[in-house]
Amino acid sequence: MDDVKIKVGMLVSFDYQYIYNSLPRIYEYSDTITLAVDQEYRTWAGVKFEIDDKFWNWIKEIDIKNKITIYKDDFFDASLDALANDSRERNMLAQKMGDGGWIVQIDSDEYFLDFKQFVDFLKSKAKWTLPGAKPIDIGAFLIPLFKQTEDGFLYINDSFETVVLATNKPEYQRARRCNHYIRYTPFYLFHQTWARGEEEIWFKLNSWGHMADFNITSYYNLWKATDKNNHKFIKNFHPLYNNLWQELRWSAGSNIADFIIKYLKEFPTTVPQKFYLKKRMGQVWRVLSGDTKR
Image (cartoon, rainbow, N blue to C red; front, side, top):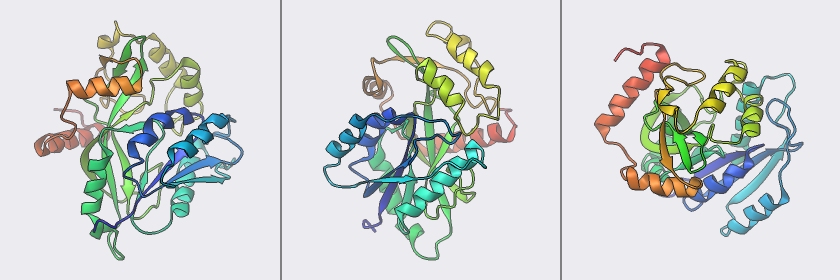
């Protein structure tokens, strides 16, 4: 069923500038794209931010097929913590996107290596979107970018980190997780989670849905001290899950686009083999369950 709709939602917040890198990578193969932004320009923690008018002009310029809708609403509830507001906004966004098809939510700082292959997979499972189908979430793998140096990026190539991207029934309970069965797929996204400026990292830490789950000051100091020369000594450094990020690598790149081009030359196979996927998922479950024995 090639006619199954691929409906993408993206959240526009203080880090909106990363959409310049992420949106063009998914535009062609999306049927609709809905950008959600708080009507008062507030983060989930209630912190105010600004968006340059040039961004909205750029959105109009690239939307040559009229796929993009801007959805403004009150996404901040002072009675909720940041993570609860995160889930609340995603549910409101999904409702705005409408019933039917695949609901895909991609964050502004996530860059698909090959969105077409992911869409092809979703379309091959169109029967999962039919009335009466069991609820299911579709996940993939992240390659986190940890820090930008003068001439490249520090990143976690063998991360055990996964992300839920698509669902046939959006009932978000914790960020993008709906507590449905998760079908993981062998696709990758770069995640510019920490490769940002110092002020932005501090702002992110104080606005993040997980801000209450670890010591943000201590982690911020670790991030500041990490560089191209000492990164090989940093082990098991994920702020929430031990062993999820085991080590750092460095690759050249003057910016994100340049880095991705050079990365793909070094690692041309962007879809892992089935045996690799099975092995990696076994490692993910052990890490998240606390059983890290190999």
